[in-house]
Length: 398
Image (cartoon, rainbow, N blue to C red; front, side, top):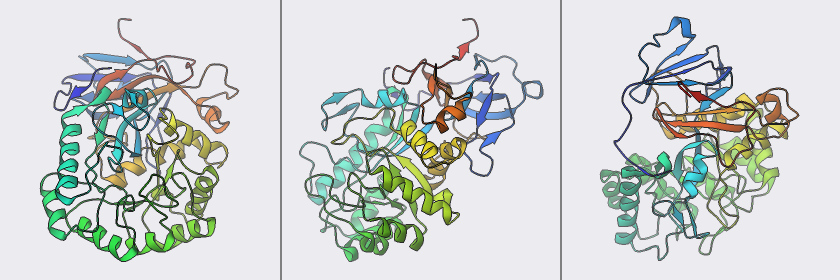
């Protein structure tokens, strides 16, 4: 799939009808009572039953054939470089592969794998602004990638954060991947970032790449970053008592990643839900990394947390969509009027033991994707990466 220049969004009307199951992405009502979505100029216009909506004169009519529609998945933790290439695994088109796994939006946790990544202050600011501009101007496969996340260094001062924010930088790379590892230093950097509207993520657990280090619960708590990055480790997790401490002692986002400790992910999820704070849980892959590119990483996290964590699949889908959208202040991730028209259409996989798509996910199986839509444009038909779906969405006239 070719990259899409920013600004070339579709105009006109799309109708998605014959929906068998509509997942909202919202914890307060994860399943919507509706069978049709009307999209106008790339945004959700109305949701309900076809007989009650204005579906006339649609340029694109999608018949889901009674299958499931969910918000496009959001990967809260990726490490891009430039374009659709990762030097970490020397692999091209990795972002397009994630599109085939239902991911429509990605959040950079730092462009740390860039060969020769500058660590001087002028260089790191320039690289962050360049990454922010690059991925704002171009969408690999159509995927919306929020990038330009500088890795902070000790020599930075408040003015640096003010300048980056004025230039459009809205994210910090994982605090702890650079020279800033002490709690007091991290706290100051996070405070400066927050002052200028830059959201922060902190590395949690053992070192992941050369130059990173152990960031334990005491550092995470004092730094007070907006997102507890890969609380289940990336790869190496903190002891479970420290993870419990993090869940109980702060109100920040609890990020669970595919590229981490699965036992720790389940523990962190259960602990956060015991606290009745499931709105804090967000999902990422922490990729590309040493364990590779994981196009189905978010779907696999959903199946893991539902099957072994015994959480309803429709709730876990909220962790990968609406929760992240709300924590990250995004205009996608929820199926409600005014939001970006980002959808993944899917059904249970062929020959799964589950009688429905939700049953199959609760049994640990992945769904089959038949279509991915971003901003009202069809970006992917039958996925090349998921198992084949029982039923496939079609377009009028096919």
